[in-house]
Length: 110
Length: 116
Image (cartoon, rainbow over all chains, first blue to last red; front, side, top):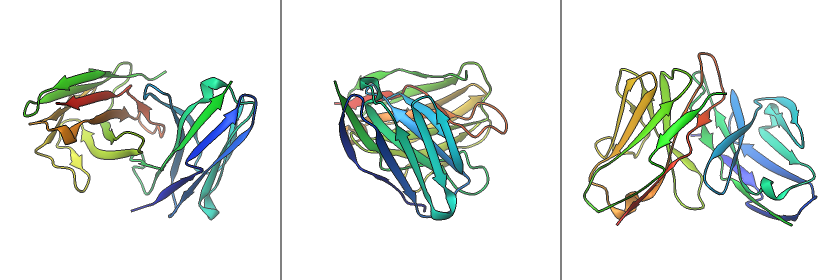
């Protein structure tokens, strides 16, 4: 099956800093989503981005499908950004079935 | 927006007992729901795809007789962990696609199972 690797695995930053999270996948995908899992376990969808670039406030994401990677940018980090960020991909048709990446644990220090 | 409700949020049970977890779509109909399992500090692993009115599709390595899935209506899927053992202790999360043609998954808040 498809392999989804994220880097870095852990990231500790001061409040206000910027960060870039990376997601590499081993095969072509028709669906790619970024999620934030808060400390209580709730997953929130950040972006649906199988290709191209999107921005939502302090967050933006870029997927280069031909090179099989996606990047999530977080600017001006806040403590509420802490948690685990996952990318998840779907292949083929009926692509709601997602394979999750290894995750990046982000800790923002006040 | 689309909301998926999951219950209970936490459950503690004795070894050998069965536990049922419910996943409901509150404001949309979901013909398909997904059940994931997450061990501490690990990623989410898909266990099974729950299909309304038909049998669930289980991922390789997941025991269908141990993890019973029922999707009896368009708004409710249940996962029953039968004869639970300590190694079944985990965080179980359901998700659904809110609407025909939608690609974005909506997740429940998860259920933390502890088997003593």
